[in-house]
Image: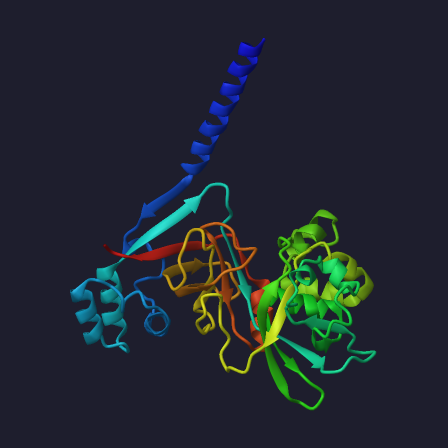
Length: 338
C-alpha cells in the first residue's frame, strides 16, 4: 500500500510541475515591425517622447555611444527625427499571457469638497498613515466603523464615505475648503488588504448591468443612497492613507510627474517604470493610438495587456476616465535594442 501511495504521490507532483510549466509557457513575446503598429505612420510623437526623455534615465545611461551622440543631435521638436530615432533604437514587442485580460481603464485626480474640522455635513475623515503597524492593518469596514478614531490621524473631513472611496481609488486628489483654498493630498500607504472591485460585486448581485459598469454611473448610484453605498464599498477591504503634498505636479509610483494622456500605469511584473510603449485603444472615449510612458502601477493592474491611463485633473477627465473600459487594448512595449 505504501508503494502505491508513493507512486500516486509522485504522479500528482509530476502533474503539478507539468501544469506549472504549461502555465509558464503561456506568456508569449511577439516581435513586431513598425508598419504593424496601428496609427504609427501618422502619429505625432513630440510631446510623448519629450516627456519620456525628461522622466527616464534609460537613454542617458545607455552604453551605446552612437545612441548618445544621436540623442544629443536630435531636434526634439521635429516629429520625423523623433520617429526615425525611435525606429532605429527601439524594437516593438507585444507581450501576451492567455490567463490575463486585455483592458484599458482610466484614472484622474479626484476633486472633493472638504473641511479641516468635523461637522454634521462633513463627518467622514481621511487618515494619515498610522505610525503603529497594528493601526495600519484594519479592514476598510473597521476603519469606517471608527477603529482609528481619537488617534489624531484625521487629515481632513469629507462629505461622505463615497467621496473618501473615490479619492482612495484614484490615489490622490485636490481638496477644496470653505474659504476657497485648495490642498493636494497623495497616497501615503495602504492597510495591506487586497483590492477587490466593487463593480464586480455590484454586477454579481445584479445591482448594475454590464453596460452600467462605468465610473459616472456607479458614482451616481452610490450617491443616491449613502447607507447602501457604505454596505457596498466595504466589500473592498483595501483602505488608503494620505498625506499632504505642497508640490504642483502629481506623481506616479515611479516618483516622476504624471502627464495627462501620456502617463500609464502598468503591471510591474512585466514592465519596468519609465518604459516606452505604443498604446492602441480604439474603444475608449478618446479613441487613441499614441506613445505613452509607464510611470505608475496599481492593485487592479494585472497582466501584460492591462493598462490604466492618466487623464488629468479637470472635470472632463473624471468623466472620460470613468467611461474608459476598452477590452480591445493593444499595448506594445518599445524595448531598447541591445
